[in-house]
Length: 211
Ligand SMILES: Nc1nc(=O)c2c([nH]1)NC[C@@H]1CN(c3ccc(C(=O)N[C@@H](CCC(=O)O)C(=O)O)cc3)C=[N+]21
Image 1 (cartoon, rainbow, N blue to C red):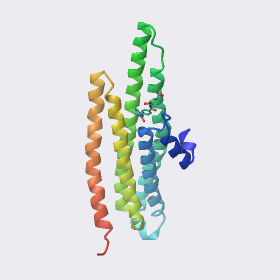
Image 2: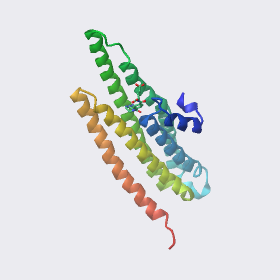
Image 3: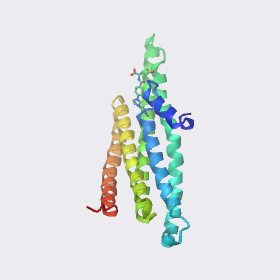
Image 4: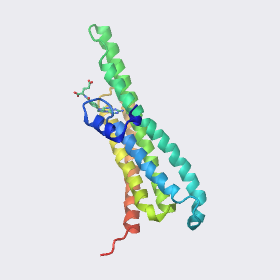
């Protein structure tokens, strides 16, 4: 499993020509790392008298963050496996016309599954950006830089997931499927842009460097 590797082995694997991890799995990792940073800020806020008014909100955000962290960690291997589905479908025999047809069908199905999987990674990363905004607003301001990094790692995760969705869509023939997924893909991107503006705007307001 990819998630049990050391960071060094993971990055070396990534750098090699092995088919996983790919862009989709790294998207999930970026989202998980972002979530970890946001959760760190929750931990630095919890139980502190200074932040007593924020305790209820932080407890709620922490639960959501823990759910997203688990889901994104699962997505690192999950996405890689969904891509392996495509690789394996291409390896099916193609000597007869029947074999060719069923191989083609299997490649199409596996590619749809891979597109759906990376879309779900992108959607989870979008939730991490919302979690980041909550944590920016309610969390310990000493670590607000971590809250911003949480949101911006998730933003990178979204784009990494969505280009993966799109490269898969490019080889899918079922136009109805393509339209349906593309509509969600575009909506996620639009929402991510709004959230990114909000996050960078907050960062500019909250981290003021004397000149
Ligand atoms: N859910 C999902 N996650 C992905 O990460 C994902 C995906 N879908 N869809 C497609 C892109 C692209 N990507 C590649 C990974 C390895 C090779 C690779 O190793 N290619 C070898 C051949 C691989 C083989 O045939 O074994 C080559 O081009 O020479 C290529 C492309 C992962 N992606």
